[in-house]
Picture (cartoon, rainbow, N blue to C red):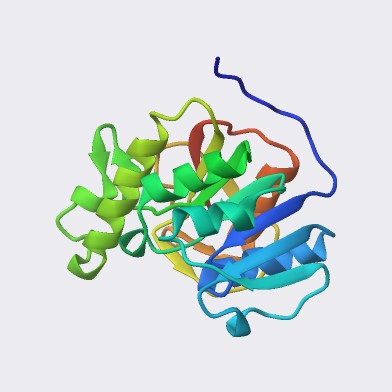
Length: 213
């Protein structure tokens, strides 16, 4: 039987896959700053920032059994890795095998709609260099939509996902791309705020949502 948990948490034990990347490193800091205990996973753990309550470990996202062993015992798992370098079936299976019910994915913007039924990735001016990653991200979301035994969440950034400041001021949306007169953007830092907010106060179980200015 499928079920959805919506319990709010103050402090959790989180496994973060891809903790040394652009988004992952900001998420790691946000989790640490809020007092969460984090198992930070990367192929090169020496690149993971040394932060309070963070344990850096070596892990391979393509090794289902090895990854499952690292994920076991956590309250939630965050996946922050390139879609072209990962397999959603392997990651989902690892989370299931580990017995972790809460799974959050750092998503992409390509599958967001710019108009009803019109995805960003399908627009003629979408950069060719990003199409492979965006297509894999859209496929990952489609795969998650078939999963009813995990409390998953897919958080899409805005079109421009860039280094910046942690302001804590942003908007949330659903499946439509957020934009303003200044364009469509979100900093890695504020994205991390929105993602950790979702862990602490779940509001988008088995749904995709987006964040932008």
